[in-house]
Length: 316
Image (cartoon, rainbow, N blue to C red; front, side, top):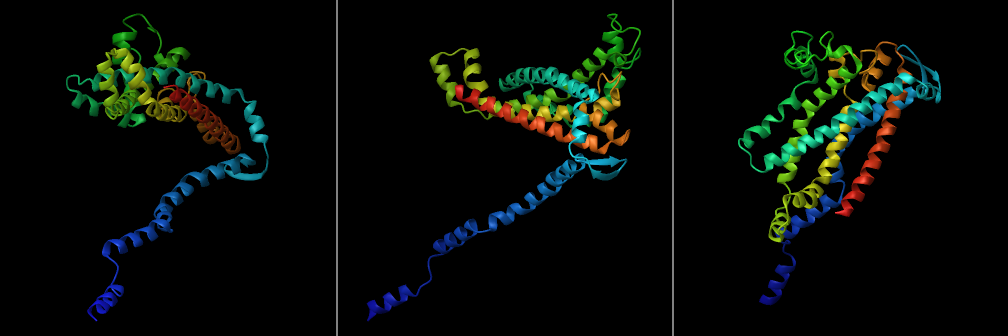
């Protein structure tokens, strides 16, 4: 009788707490709960990103008059834009800034990151200080540099430019080559510290076992950097490169405050071109078409860069 009672009591008992908790967790994880948690972020992404982009594409396919969207235009805006020399000049200026500034930033930043990773003096103070140029508003950066590069009385102009007889009778921003060089210099100054700090964090996150093995094998510093450090930083370098490409194509505040795109459109980046098209000439359809073309070009560029990055990574 006691065994039957015990058997009946065991059969009617509740399952263990751990088993019940596992069942509830499996039901939650296997149901719609994860999608419910992701819904606010996905909804925000759709409202903030996809809806404006879709509206931009829609405007690019219509005729516009001032701020009014009128009849269907098809690809007329794109055809007009492709034959617009000013658009391609603006793209060329942006590409020039990208081609010169970004390699300098990465080269100098990698050197700074390697120095910080070796524990140089006051590295704990230098590392946070590297964020200062990046967190300053671009408009403030432009105003400060405009003061320092002011003709005759600007600090940098007086101490370095006029003292060596360079542009002694004109402003740095009055000639094409010097204005572009100034924009590149300011961009390098503002974003090199940010890239250096990111690379420093990436170096600190690399595993130590490959370095220990290289030390045992007697590898030189250059070999260690080439075959361990650099390949380990490739994912971070790829992400930082794409970020800097995006930022370069969005550069606006600094150029607008310093030169407004001049002289003679020498510093007119694609952002300045779009600004003038919208607010000076009210060409909304043409500007929307330009935005769509820029997106397509950047998508192609990002795809090619990703493929090259993955192939290079496989070599190591």
